[in-house]
Length: 100
Image (cartoon, rainbow, N blue to C red; front, side, top):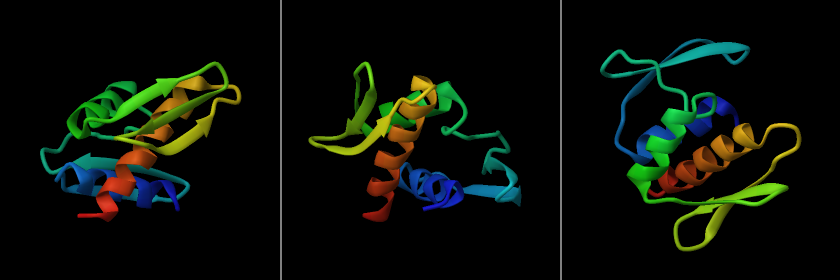
């Protein structure tokens, strides 16, 4: 799934309307309130997304697990544990968005 598809489904999970400007090589995501929103790159957006959905975020030394009652997303940290944690949150949220 592309980053754009992940963001669309994550936004759907919380009932947010978003628009994209640009292309897959570089795009901005803007909410219906004309605010930039990208939980893949912004720690605050990712945390607010996790809180709104009641996600459990479990960060270990090598990977992050994220989900509700079970972990629906696991991301290896590689060189950036914060980026992996944000992606785990968005992936778990996108799974919830698929159900709406």
